[in-house]
Image (spheres, rainbow, N blue to C red):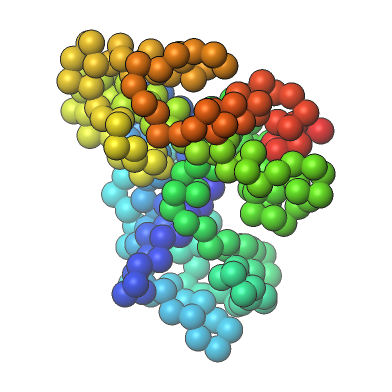
Length: 260
């Protein structure tokens, strides 16, 4: 399961990436150098132009990273079916928040682009990974609920509960990524590209077994509703309590992740 990510730079150049949903440290490239060593490998680069209801991709170049290991046919199909695989798209709807609904000229392919901040996207991904929820089954509905296109708040769920959960979940995934980087350094060149991990000031790649153990202790404390931290975490007791509420897989989690 992956989602397409289109990063648009100020100069009009774009990066089209595939965002994968797998915990850091389980990247296949640890065991096979032909596999992608990124949580968002590059599909292609291009230059974007939006004019008179037509979205064009010019100067397109494929990324060098393998998307599906040694399966060249899968790689070819993904790149050709990606949004940058077509030179032009017809804009059929445009929202005030930067949303674009696109369709190919022959009507066979469609895309719905949603503008989102990098850290919110990282937190959304962390939220579904930390809760161990199937992205293939629930990601789209979950994102719609977070972004207000489905009725979460009307169902009695507060914005604050969701924001707190996502914040702490992102911190937990950052801890896990840092801890697993110790394994990467020992087993490969350690050059994993983790674009989808939020940075926190108190989370750094460990330089010793003791530092890795300290990261793992913080992770274990988060997994327990009353676990004690040896350091001051970048979240409040209320945020942690709301994180535990969602992690408990109760009614709030079922509403958030569309499990009902």
